Length: 405
Image (tube, rainbow, N blue to C red; front, side):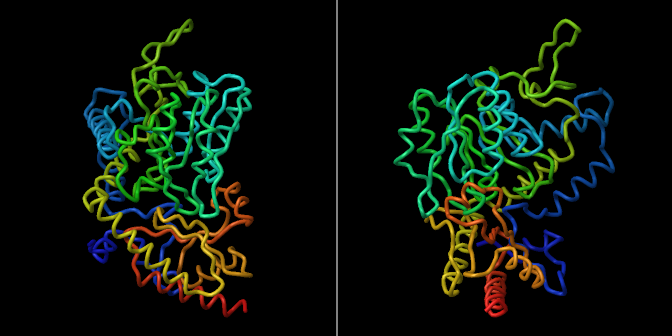
């Protein structure tokens, strides 16, 4: 078992008071807090080694370039990619998906082609494909969900057809925590020669992600979701696809040669990394990933499952509370409503008790519509949370019920 109290001491923000109450942070699905290693890496880098990456032969530039590419290797090993050039640094999951929607779309999407997504997608895995479909005259198709918040696998076979050129699917739902059976889905898609993108923003921090074992063609995630800094993310792509895709943006670092008549592009992965890279965030992301690995991703998954079980049992004892997303295979995220009380009101009152949750549609309006609601309250837990904090949340919910009775 994890030494959670020792772990908590490594996250400075968790020791503060909010409205004279100890902070209880249950908004990890939005962003995770940062360990000292990540914070100190950013501070020390700016103080001691700051220089432009890939640009010069002087000492600072060579040092920072070495650390930047070493960070790429950390990411490669963390997700079990085969090659470093398959790891592209971006600004985050949204940037990764937009990159793919443009570059893959330019190369492979034609009029009347179909792009398949699911009903539980985050807006970041809906809107870029809508824009692409409109630009190219293609069609967007949707895998529905059942009342448990699981994909309708019985509908998948028909939706995967000769017109489908890409399946873009969330690995884990950000709104309700459902873990999709992505390996099985990828096998079904590949049987029809359909490539698959996984949005891993909500999966990367909760357990082991092995892109080689999954055999996905693309995988996207954000650094700030996995204890790293903001403004950095990753798009993994199989080399065979990335080589055929045109660049998303033009500028410095992504070129081999430039003339007014023609430009040739750099080799992977720099072809997709135009401009000055966010090297401080990339290096700090590597520190965050190393920190997670040092704790042990299997141990994290076991502990968070324990938290989920404890929280679910406590919630089910609260009269008038309904949980949305009841798949037996889910991460430590619980979305819920209290009968007759607006989720925004719940979030505001809990905040005054020092408890941070998320209330709203969680950037998943189509999913909320499928449940016939406008939004939920979401408590997203991680390995630095405790059962005692869950107790405080439940006590807060009981107080709210009394206030609004």
